Length: 302
Ligand code: GDP
Ligand code: ZN
Image (cartoon, rainbow, N blue to C red; front, side):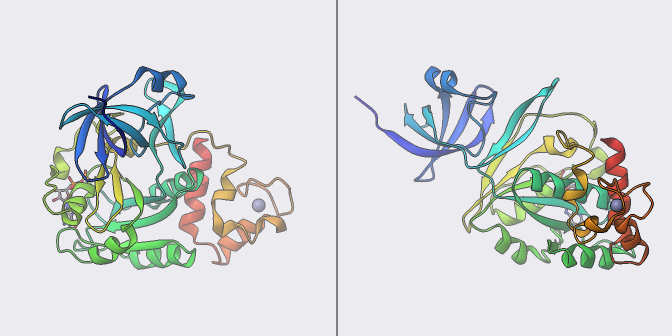
């Protein structure tokens, strides 16, 4: 019997097989047809988030016949071969930078890195601050208002008490969002609260080992009850900022924009030049000093 090709979306990778969600909501473990591998133009013939045409071979298995054109691709360097880019997930439209106010402690430099990564990947950023039930660092309100003043959506939540989760749900509905955050911030706990019956394993912060370890596996896309998907990737905790030049870094700081034309030198690194309008704006409080400090720290690593 000839089986008909149908539409699906790749929701997970597991070794050489891909899990495809059919439009009726059922899932199939699929192999990739040889011809798909041959026509692939980059290192990732099939990625989580790809819209595909596939054929069912039985009620749990199938084969991917065609990968539709990708609207967006979120890249990162291949593990062990850092010059080769790999598609972490495709067709995403939002990036949620998930951080916690405590354990692990809030680092605005990490938020900035995620915002830059979102910008580079053309994803709309969202800042999710979890564990709001814990004792607040004294500057938390200032940090939240500084990002909001720049036009970023900031959503304080507590996965533990449920506070803020309704607002988060609204922001995620009908989007495909990448959850980016260090392990231990509560991504799994948040996902478990958003998706009844999901039951992802959560781990106590102290049991998180191998903090700096690169992991490629377990990129998975979860379907939200209100529509849309969330991609959770443990590998993202080590996401660096590749392919960004020091000279371009200032353009990722939207708060610097009104000032750089007024710097005495062009180009200006805004770090050591005299007559720098960005530094002047930091000194008179028009640019949040923590943002500027993060900029200098990130520039140092490039
Ligand atoms: P992940 O690595 O980002 O997926 O983090 P987990 O979801 O595994 O959570 C790490 C730890 O933080 C677990 O012990 C959770 O119970 C705890 N946790 C998660 N969310 C909250 C929260 O909102 N408040 C508090 N106090 N603890 C939380
Ligand atoms: Zn300058």
